[in-house]
Structures are given as C-alpha cells and as structure tokens.
Image 1 (cartoon, one colour):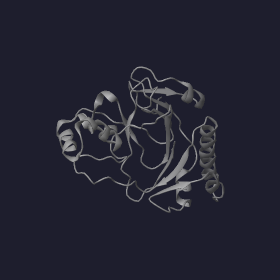
Image 2 (cartoon, one colour):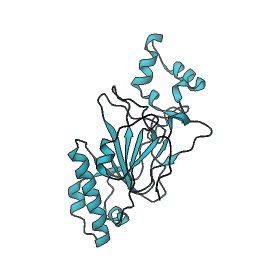
Image 3 (cartoon, one colour):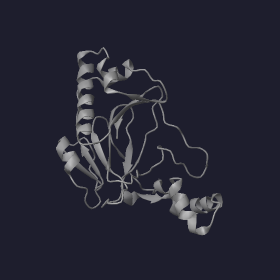
Length: 231
C-alpha cells in the first residue's frame, strides 16, 4: 500500500540509491522514497532549543541529546539521512522551524516560501527534503499552476512598480525572483509530501530536462515546531 498518493508528476522509489539515480522523465519532476519511519521524532523536537524562528541543528547537537530508546531510533535515522546525502555531495541542513519570514511588502504578489514556487540554481542540482515532525510541504503538478508574472493583473502592477527601460523588464522580474512564483489553477489538487518520506525535487538549472517542481512550505500548526531536513 502506497503512503503517497499517485500523481503524473511523482515517481516512487524504495531505496536511497534509486532516489538519487532515477532520472526525471516526461511530467515526472518529483521522486519520493516512501518510508514508514520508526522512532519518536517529537521527543527530539521537545529536547531542542529554538534560538530563532528557524534554528539549524547540527549532527553534534543531535548526538548530545539525552533520549529514550524511541528517541534514539529517530536520531539514528536523521543522522543516516544526513550522512548519505553528504556522501553524494549534497549539503543537507536540519532545521527546527517555528515559522519562516513572510513577504508582505507587496499586496499583489508574495515571494516567500509559503507561496508556490520553484527553486533555481546556476549549476545542476536537486532539492532534497524530509519532514520528520510537524506540517509537511505541498507540491503541485505544473499543469495545475500559472506563472504569476503571466497573470495580466499582476503583470500590470509589476510594470507599474518597475522603473526602467522596457528592455530590462524581464531581467527585473528575474532579479527580484517574481518569475519563480506560481498561482494554483482553480482545480489544482496539492500533493502533500507527508512525514518521513525523503523527496528529491527538480530544480530550474541550465541543463534541466523537465519542468522544475512547484512547491511551497506549509503554514505551521499553532504551537507545533517542524523538524525538516533540506538541501
């Protein structure tokens, strides 16, 4: 029984090697290593200290926690994920999250991580993430979104905001990351990434062969921190 709902944009794998070696093809731009993890991840969250709205937790921070057997099982899973991703050249970060910064400077478009967006890189790379505790991110198939800068009302307001020659307007949209953000279509059906699964999402880069994966951070539950691995 699959833990993740099937979708034309998602391919399921059963181990770490397949996660990092399977190629995106066609409409598939998200790969999921489905896992039903054991251990008490909430205990880890309760033992950590939030120092800012988003606090990076190192492997050393995890190692010194005084945990029960179930808490230690969860810790070993996280440490293994960090190690495996590091070994393939990624730079994973474990974050304890209360909330992210919100972008409310413009009332007609947001560019924070709560807005549906894609990641961009000048080099070939992927986004890996796993939610161990708390609310999980959502993704949307590219056929179910519209780039916000192509929505006439938003584009008109961005043109009014832009103070420069017409030839530089597209560069302005890229420079301030407006072009990375998307609006769900009325019939869009978000796919929740769930807890415990390790995901690999396609990034917009010069050699990418598929559309980048559209995703967003979830709104946090009141009083509940998220424990997220991301790179």
